[in-house]
Length: 375
Image 1 (cartoon, one colour):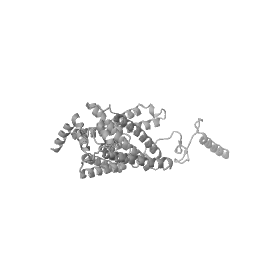
Image 2: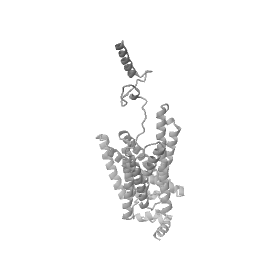
Image 3: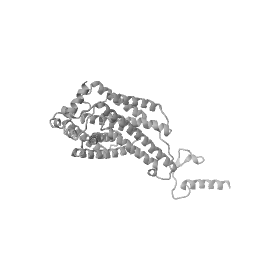
Image 4: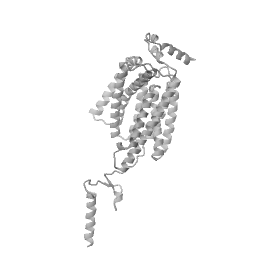
């Protein structure tokens, strides 16, 4: 009954005349509340489908890399299969982008564990990777956590309008949050760049702080595009383009630090830590900027956080010590091909000779010396 009343009140308050007289936070939220069920489920479905497509694309690209390295002829970007994987990833990311316009950011971000689960399943089926006990336990925990957080997440969603974004941007709690975030980011950047402290937590915290702005701007841009498609044009307001610039810039720097982390550390460390930090930053951004936990019962908040914890543990177990596909380096000769040599040794050939350079010369000298001794 209360849900019907809220829906009727939101319909009445969304008229242009009522919007002119709204000044309080409650009035602003009353302007954009809507029936949550259909929109909420649509956002979840789009996000899950997008994450599954991303996991499929990653495995396609991985298979293309392996196949090209085995052939050793053309670079990977000449492979049609690799470009198909890139196209699928674009579609998946577009789905995730659209999902932010239909469901709370604090829910869409944890659903990223679906990509990790699907990627593990696909790699076992198609890339013939080994199934481990930790994969089964981790997948079970991640699926359970996803179910719990979807069940207890905030079920109310909002119409993201330009006026609402402007109101949130100038709110004192977001200004304070942004000040603290910029301060912490500058300190971490000083420690990382000037003091040369290359610790994975520092790098991933830099990524997480940028991800917080990314989530805020992505939901704002996606929501305003969604409202424009529905008929309420939001693209004429300057705040849309401000958020678009913030989204592009934060994504670019986030990718930059992620690439640096992947170069310095193993993927089995980067993937779970990035998922945990990104999800935490997205939840905090949703709470502070979009007030997504406002009016949510204490039990729902506890169970939602418990579901996130289960997903974190599941992703950690799945990503921990993933087996790597062994690839033969074309620049080295394995010693197991040479008599009386250990298979753990490798000798680098000389590229400008038709023979194997110093290795062949040494073998020929040894053979000649043995022939001379016999004679």
